[in-house]
Image 1 (cartoon, rainbow, N blue to C red):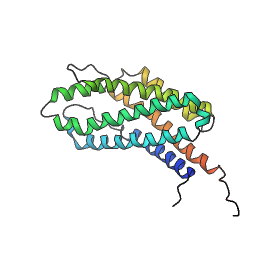
Image 2: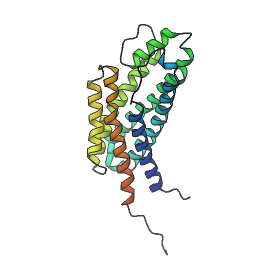
Image 3: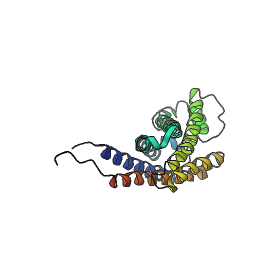
Image 4: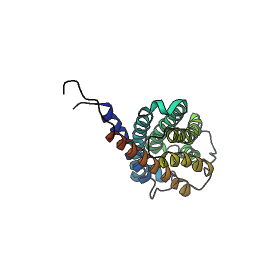
Length: 218
C-alpha cells in the first residue's frame, strides 16, 4: 500500500466523520452523572467512546488544517491550536472520569461528587486541585477554538461553507448556554457533531476532485 497525501487527507476526513457521529451518539440517553452512575458499565462504555472520539477529532482537525494550510493563515493556526488543546483536555478529563473516578467512588465519594459537579459547570464544595483549572481551560479552548477555527475554514472557501459556520455557531451557543441544565447542555453537542461530520465528508470529497501528478514516462 502506497501512502499518499490524498490517502492521509481522506483518512483525516473519515476520522472527523466518525468523531462527529460518536460525539452525537454518546449524548443520546446519557444518564445524569453522580457517585452512583459513574461506576456503571454504561458510563464506562460511554467514556471509552468519548476517548475514541477525542482522538479521532484531533486527527480530523489536523487534516482539515493541513489540507488548506495556506488559505487558513494565522487565524486558522490559532484556531487549530486552541481547538486541539480543547480536544486534548477532553481526552485527559474523560480518562479521569472513565477510569480514575470509578476506582475511588467508594473510598472518596466527596471528591468524586465535587469533580462531577465542576465538570457540569456547577460549584464544587471541596477542593479538586488542578483538575478544576483543567476543566475551565477545556471549556474555553473547545468553545473559542471551535469559533476561531470555524471562521478560518469559512474564509478559506474550500469546504462546504455551512459546516464551518455551524462549528463556529455551535461554540457561541454552547458558551451562551453553559449554565443550562445538564440535559439541555448535552443537546448542544449535536450542532458540533453535525459540523464535524459535514467537514470530514467535505474534506474527503475534495480529494476526489484533485488531479494527481502523472509520473514522467507513464
